[in-house]
Length: 173
Image (cartoon, rainbow, N blue to C red; front, top):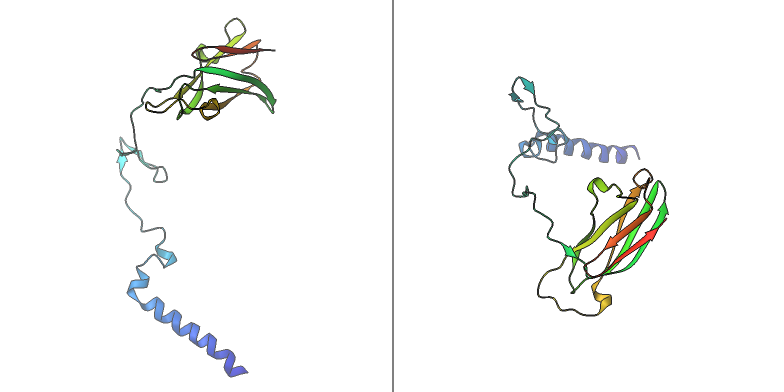
């Protein structure tokens, strides 16, 4: 029994020695000591040190210029609800786009800084509507969107209005 117990420990020790002596394993990513790489010199810019933990901004194919949102107003607003939630309210709007395939819908504020004008907070329901899609049924063109506003944002608001291309709906407090 004693000899059989020493055999697995001996195999483990021999395999450990063999693996650690191999140059390929020592330099590979299997070795935990290589996981973070080697220390490298940090450049300074304008006598300020660069924090190596914060990546520098680089030119990338993924950096895009700011492009204006190409959405257009949704044809009809069919439903508008304001639901109380923790810390504020959820403005839910449902609309029907002119054609199928509308996407990236949003409630864009018409008021500057989303401040109410005479107690009215107005949003426009917009969506990107690509060309070449057929009209289809109203259910296939339906869009649902929501926007959260805090209690502080809603201070002084008596009416919330959502505007589409052909109609508008509003709710009063």
